[in-house]
Length: 58
Image 1 (cartoon, rainbow, N blue to C red):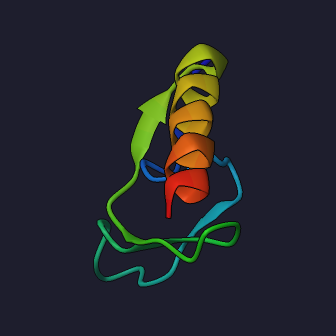
Image 2 (image 1 turned 180 degrees about the vertical axis):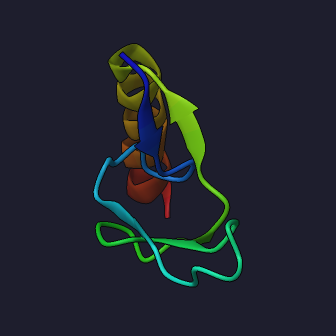
């Protein structure tokens, strides 16, 4: 099953913020704003793992 997910952290907690501009979404978990991607749970988990690693390196 495909979900709309944040390309930065893999969260499904995203909302479309500007109806006139389909590409503007916000992620309520990492504050990302911009276009989102569609993917399955495996992709979301992989993105989330990479996001967690990048947060630890900072």
